Amino acid sequence: MKALLMLENGMTFEGTGFGYEHDVLCEVVFNSAMCGYTELLTDPSYAGQGVVMTFPLIGNYGICYDDAESTKPWLGAFIVRSVSGIASNFRCDVDLDTYLKQNKVPGMCGIDTRALTRVLRESGTMRGMISYGEAIDLAAMKKQIDAFVLKSYVPEVSDREGKVYGDGPIRVALADYGVKHNIIRCLVKRGCTVKCFPYDASMEEILAFSPDGVMLSNGPGDPQACVKSIEELKRLYNHGLPIFGICLGHQLMALAQGFDTYKLKYGHRGINHPVKDLEANRVYITSQNHGFVVNADTVDPAVADVSFVSMNDGSVEGLRYKNGRVFTVQFHPEASSGPLDTGFLFDKFIDLMGGSRI
Image 1: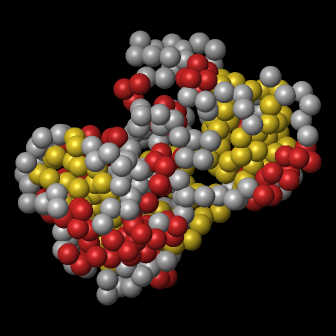
Image 2 (image 1 turned 180 degrees about the vertical axis):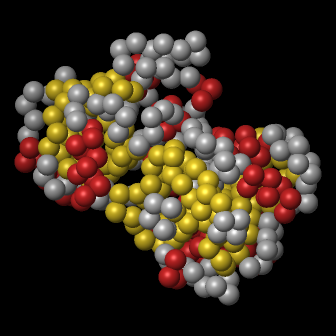
Image 3 (image 1 turned 30 degrees about the horizontal axis):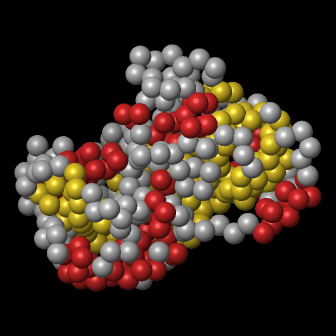
């Protein structure tokens, strides 16, 4: 079926639908990874976004359920140059097209995704709409895009069931803003019992678990929208527990300490982003997925030091707090997909909690 993408600036891109062919409004962003689309589809940080893949062929190894980062895909739409009609992989459970249909995720292929990416790089991420069919009303599409307001998806992706993973001696309370499962796996394999708490859990609820430390997860959207989470993190910081924050968790802790965040022009989304460890004077390659960053000019040196910076644009990629028990990073040390260069940060967290490495 014919598919048409319209951006908020009025530009249109025509292609072909696949997956669940249903009209959708979303924030259009791009990802430069060559692989890892199963992990991308199921990463809650992409909730509500229409993701454009810059690599031209997607779907050739199908979908493997064991690689999923949550129980279902969350993104608003999947936009690719060419979708493979053959899934060749001994681990494959289902092909990409069928998977998107089963989970009601709209797909679009057959457009020049690199040209679209150039537009997003030059103009910034934009709201957009994908419509399907032979008779598409452009004026109606533009009207819907103009009225579309981006929202916070954290309440939707956060776990409210209080699930517990692992049975190790180290107890970790995980504040779930849209956690990737591999963060939990990285903790469990290091001897942790991990209990998930919803994004709006109070400090008292978390402390009732008697944790040795607190993990702040990744998640979607604007961190400043998470007002309740920020307030509770102010209190948790003062309690003195070891805290490790990743991505949105990193931004929320910064806001809790009075620093500011801002939206990047087109974000960092890919699996080969270089960051520099300022203390070790060493560069690591990282997996990233975020549209907001901490404003370096607002970081109070009496409260925290910038520990990592992006080698691409100099933005803040990590903070080390002066109380010695809290550190956060913007990138994903658990990767999935991506390099495992910074997995040692989980070992650092274990050390802070007084545990022994496994």
